[in-house]
Length: 351
Image 1: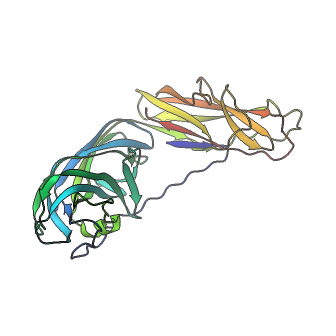
Image 2 (image 1 turned 45 degrees about the vertical axis):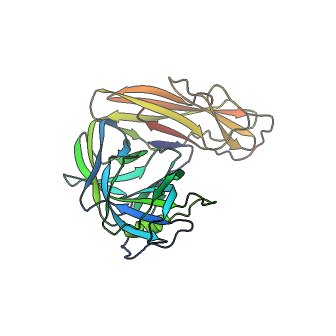
Image 3 (image 1 turned 60 degrees about the horizontal axis):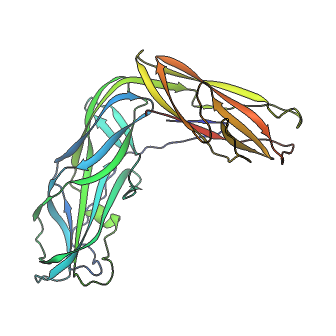
């Protein structure tokens, strides 16, 4: 969860789910490929599950690790030849398509966004739904006989690891147990080329695969929220008022935010303070924020050792607690009179 200080702001938007209409027929040609196939799941198949058991603030990260081995069927294809031409290069594209909201079994709508993901996974925002994409680069293999497979051919596809966090927005959820499922479409593409192909194989676009993967499966979720904490206000302004250039240096302004949890059990939180406007010089007693006209502010969080070199700290809250943020004006060799303004963000998250 992010809380913005010194006049910085954050917005979010959620949309209803929409799926693309299916386009019948063969896929467009892909240069250099002998055979290329799009594989998808049957209707209503369960492709796995995600679980969370812990505390919450505004969102909780739920790990989408591996999509289990699945029996997929051939949904669409491109064949450059109908002969049994041998191939020696293979490549794979793995796509998951899912809406921006999940529905729990008791009728509660839970917005979803995409959190941390490895470098080998790309995410796309398609307006009303997301796509995750994992590419397996071209690989040379021992020559194998190829075939233009018929539509409906089934294939036992191995597990595919996405290692991506889905963020469930739980600001409107109380402590409790929530189960349900996320509608999810699977589009896996396999490409087969002559082993002497001098260049990399061309691949279909995400839009092309999106159009033909309309069968909807489900990814079940099981969320247990043991305690929930709320933070207020969500933004603060640290105002230093008006001063002469000789008296402003070292002036201090403070503000307090409140953290309150539903239950009295201990909740561990991680604080991370970052400047959004770079300071004029480096500071080691806090996090420097550039204010313009050669002036800086040094921000600190009371009872923590947060600084530019160590911007994060763990704290424990039992039922409720306060965080006091302090800003100290710093004059530099280039300081001049004028209006001063800067911004920083403090992230409050579950470690």
